[in-house]
Image 1 (cartoon, rainbow, N blue to C red):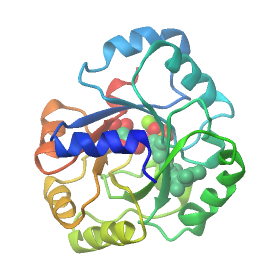
Image 2: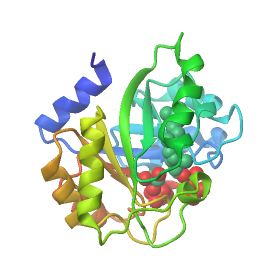
Image 3: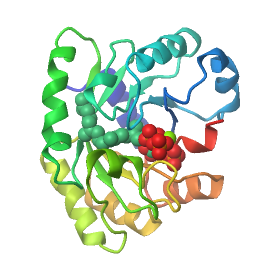
Length: 231
Ligand SMILES: CC(C)=CCC/C(C)=C/CC/C(C)=C/CC/C(C)=C/COP(=O)(O)OP(=O)(O)O
Ligand SMILES: O=P(O)(O)OC[C@@H](O)CO
Ligand SMILES: [Mg+2]
């Protein structure tokens, strides 16, 4: 069963309306400056993502509550672990780290999250999460103890994305890591986009308008920007 947020995303893909998510890391987010922050982000922003590779307990819920009170933008949880789940958000990106071989991030965290999801109205969207080398040691790599896929190995990246799709993922997320030196290469985006039939999210190291446009032009349906809008 597809929920309203996923349906609306699919509609935007059909209508070729590119989506822009701004990532809020609750640990770095100044709650007292929420309104200022929302003024500062691009007016074409379509979604807010909230999450971090590690977040202090309760900070996610606190941030989401404040955001909900002042914006109508849909709020998607993008959690580094199950403790970041809160029913105050709209959607949970149910990530599985397909690039790695750490069972904890393939299925362990997901099982631990179930008790928190039973009574929640969150729309849960299965997301194949693929970490790609962005030129520096990313927080995701450190936290999960996994290596990113090399940007040279396009076939492996495409096959990983397709395996995710066959396993039932509703999104593929190509991630170069927060604060990556270089984002996912346009050629990789375009090869993955050609292979899959589910929406494609791309993030990590995208700081300029040109990089964002390059990602869209090569087939990203959504771009995620975080560091560029952090203080
Ligand atoms: C579905 C559930 C319950 C959990 C998912 C658990 C998985 C598989 C997580 C994937 C691996 C992971 C640690 C993702 C974190 C994604 C994220 C929000 C990255 C942003 O990292 P920052 O914390 O901003 O990094 P910096 O500190 O470098 O800025
Ligand atoms: O912080 P940046 O580099 O924009 O990365 C965003 C996001 O894809 C990280 O998980
Ligand atoms: Mg960050």
